[in-house]
Length: 364
Ligand SMILES: [Mg+2]
Image 1 (cartoon, rainbow, N blue to C red):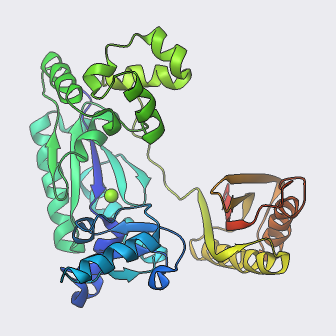
Image 2: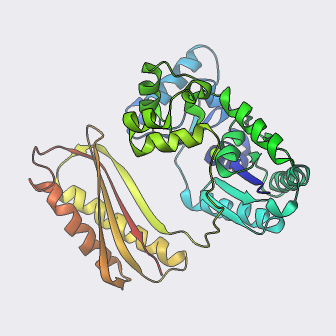
């Protein structure tokens, strides 16, 4: 019997900042770009629960978040605290949380900086699995002063959806030791959900499905595999199985970060090569610095991301024949990828650039 848990930290970056600065506790807090009194660019990375009451959420433009906070102030509520992200700190905390999970569970998969899958099949029963998760939750609260939400189910898909149904500080079990009951429970659980709650169904798919009269997973199940394939191709096939709670993907332990990168939103959109190359060079140095601090010697792949003013985003990557280790090598490769964006090769209509990012992969 497979028993999988998904552990998701609650408002992770914001919770870490609140924890580390007692005077911010209980106030609305936003981790994201500098709002510059409403003129700032970039987006909200994480909003704590208090800030969410103001309508502020991840990916909201930071200027909007500022506006919402100002409106709250006019209503006599506290202004939001804006904090710029400290990714190195969050990565350290994430490491500590993974360590705690490993004390209880032999196989874990870190899906992102603030979530992981735990393979609890060894525990033998849903009751035992829930006990392990309670212990992990308690240890995270005691040692790290942070909360998380956990979902338990027969596979990663159900576990992930379940962890999201009771936040913050939830523990949701969708499953049973008897296989038939377990399958039935999972089906009932899924059927009453909105289609958006299925991982991978974003706003675009949601709208297309709603146009077909589909709002709940129950409605989605009425479409045949053929119909879904015809409308959505391969993705339609995936949706067909997801709506039925079918997912065989294993929990895969990963020992190290596979890539290290940085990105930066410019104060204003620009196509000034001096400025852009200056920023790119600085980012390359930071990336190599972080790579060395994280104990990696060399990289083989360089990826450059360019986002234009209209939010269109392009990523270009290059893999070297033999690994490189210096900031100079990275700068040289990043420049080669960047140059076509200054002329008609990658940028025929001379669009201004809003953001660039540089990343190294295949680390050794
Ligand atoms: Mg989270």
